[in-house]
Image 1: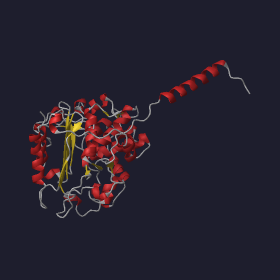
Image 2: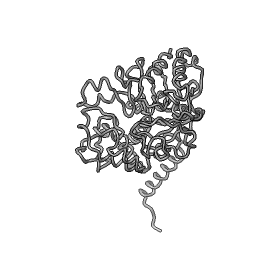
Image 3: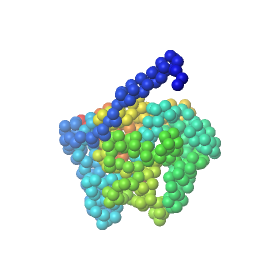
Image 4: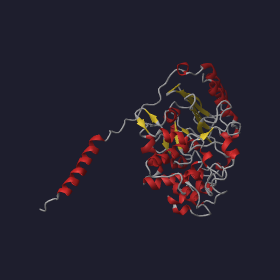
Length: 407
């Protein structure tokens, strides 16, 4: 046996000591935290009488088989606590649908997007993804149709120029295509404008971000979201797609006109289980409240730190100011963070007349809105299934009543 030199012995000892230190100092995985604890409205600075206005509106709008809002749940919280969720209506738009269940899971539509962008921000924190990089660094085949200069930041802020839906969205739905087909269609899409010069909401951009997460992590976006976000936070009634859940728990939503007559509509088993990163999350108000509490608490909930305070700050402040070619009126009146929208006060997309531009959240076309107010440390979750575009004022009325209840 050859003798080791003194230098080799020292090197081996250093490696061994480092290994022992790493193994003994490695923290045990934190246990998933409990949900947001329940409290009476007055105990967390909410006026019960003002909050009742929102409850009364939903009770009125969901009353009867021909009610304009078939299903709804509302949950309001503050300072890491919440009032009891209130549920209204039935499990679907059908006149004979069963009454809404206490464990009903709502279709999130675009309220899915912040969760997917959070997944990408985890990779930013880990030194794997740069928002200032060209998308082509991570997806070389993105360099078609003049998209070579598009930055990852443009995808996060809806300034990439990519169309909202993938170009062949309806055909892919009707063919019940796999998720990779929607992603490929988005990557190949022709942009509507030069990146960073205009704002245009884009589900295709979100699908492209999901593909970046898949390539960098080596996992499907579904597995990554579950392992890195949902499981650590103990969200057992939330899923990117409905696989593994009792379908009787899923609230069926009102379908938009373009989905009638196609196989891949929102209420089909195919679409529910597909789990599109642009709009395929199912959740309860109680589960989503944990995400709200986490964001308002600087990225930490219970013993789990999911995000750093720096990440939360960048995600929830106006990043459109970072784009030099974007017109000033857009940057000022349509603020957007990294995956989270900020309130567009004074515009049709506003959530409330009583919430300022630093309030962040998201809406969903299926009739959902979630917002968090960093000033009051309060949040509001409203899930419905009435198609927001048909009467966006309903959610605004509700949010005005909720915002007025913070005292």
